[in-house]
Image: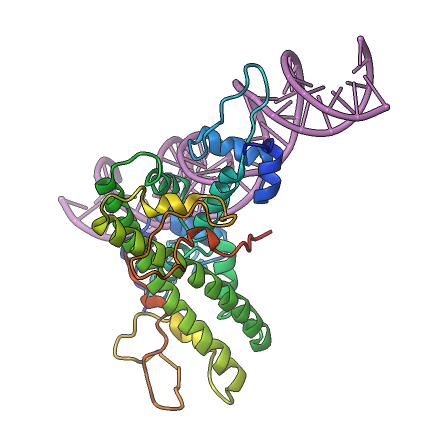
Length: 161
Length: 161
DNA sequence: CTTGACTCCGTACTTGGGTACGGAGCTTAT
DNA sequence: ATAAGCTCCGTACCCAAGTACGGAGTCAAG
């Protein structure tokens, strides 16, 4: 079961050997105990764990947060686990919302950019204007007259402290 | 129109003065030219721009990427702009997918964690097992018999080079 | 016309997330 | 039994994104 060496894990997970060791220091990955004075062996579980870390990272979790997530596994009580998970969930949903708004704006941008003619500016320009005091600044002209666009700037202000 | 000093902008945008100056150095924010030997003045546009940067950052864009986004505004040709936007859009959609998967898993986790009885493990444990060779490892037992869960690890492997 | 608060600007430090390096110890192939 | 090519471990270095610092200039109030 525990057949790989550290470089096997690294390769399988697409990361540097040093990264594995770094994660071990950070407590994200256990060091399998080594046959006294010998060389540690690893299994698929380690690979999966590294992949998990990288995936979570790409989404914007920090290593500390990921460590928390991973502790849901490592012996934390279920109640506690649930609390952490609920926090993360709120977090994730916040990010989702923001991302969706960005997505919408980008879609508009691409669309409009493709089909516009004789218009003053790219929609993003408008999106970058000041938060519209009496709408003098938004140059987005929606063909269908709808007016909910230009909200790239309206992503939630919830900055982490 | 350009009424604030730098600290006004900082305060309005909820960041440090130094951050403003840092952004100026990085080209994310123009320095308004100063009345020879005097003090620069700023308007709402700058505040908006900073807020935009912070928002984009929270979502996982780097400052370099944000600079690109902002160049959609600053005189880049529309074609080019569109290309950038399309890239970002793909990017954003990737992130969205991953996030949605995470969300689903967390929801399950919270749900299950609340309602389970006599079960072996928290669902996350299962999610952390090796990529399921002949499903010996997934202990998620879905009451309704559906079996799509446990995919926290299946977030797309697309690691940025 | 000086004092206090602020700006400007350069340089240095910090933190997070790694990478690289180097000496010593295994292991395996020859 | 020795050389190649690992591992192990510590320490040092790197980059991104700030934050802090300090001297000099500016400006408004008293």
